[in-house]
Length: 497
Image (cartoon, rainbow, N blue to C red):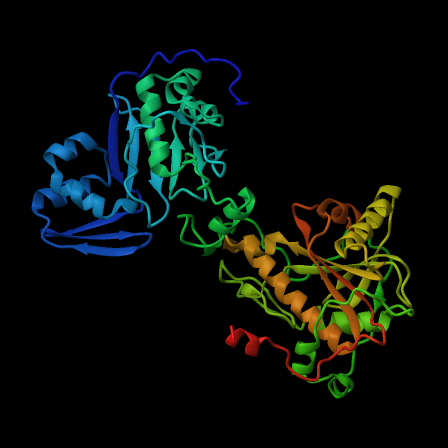
């Protein structure tokens, strides 16, 4: 079914023949030098020679006003040919005779071509990857249609255009969708042509990336440059908000002075540890435990060697981009140090069952007391989820829940913040695996966890700090070797085909 429940009233404005308008993106800077011109834009610079004075003047005018495509095709052919050379710098608008816009296609990838207005025959249906969202306050009634499959962002300037898009959530003739949205047949055809040319309609024949889920493809396309034009990387978009502290402070339900963990001796650790290659080759997930559980001392050494704060790197208070960095044993982009570790303990020598936060600066455990039955129930839900994540093969001794304080990253990084925190989780996992293997413990990274149960069990606001990884630690059985004595590979078989 579609979200359109009834036919809206036909619009009394607009209608009749439509105009197709072209303009340079607002970020494009045109510098004229005689009959030559230099174009500066988000993707770089281009210099074009011997355009002629009239074409240079007309090109510069496109930074301030629209040009009618039909007029360009008859009176400014040279300019139109230039725009076709750099289509990713050109926006395309469908408007009425008075210039009131209905929709604008904005190229967001360098691979974009001028969208064109091909007639859509038969039934049309929206791509399953397309999504509609509103613009921030101050942009009037406009909303945007986007898709990781489309090299364009479509700005819908009027509610009827959004209604037309909604009508295409079910395959139907364009004229029918236009009538449902209160648009004329000509407006519907023009919008459908813009949608098709922009890559927002399902072309059928199984061409819509069948192995991708919507959220995975969107996440991939938006967290790496190339398929969008949003500012990416360390752009410091939230300087009006104070950066979160480098070291997390006491949180909800933390009572008492905490449990100071022993600090391991360097010489003892170095003398006891196997060689790096022995640990790398011996590393594996262990889903069985010894009869005697892991000890508090072992947990303390593991956490110290993996996740402690080695030092705080002071930021320059005079620099608006300055912030305190965090140095830990594993690498992190921008020294953000946003990851935290919580322990859900079931069976550990020297430590009562319950949940604890690892205070990485003081190398201390902070007990988070359950204040009502729902919190303790959430703790049991966490342990059940961990048990299921191991295919119900092992009763957990200690579950490490890795959380991220999102603001430490998003304060500095745009578009890539969540992808970056997941990369940090990956290097933390590997560090946990290697140190636990060297210590003779039983490590096992989990592929899933319950975000909501973690927030309730640990006392967190999941939109501010949320679980992003789960890792089991237990005592290693004596019959499970912790190191390897040589390399294992399939090189010979692969070379032989």
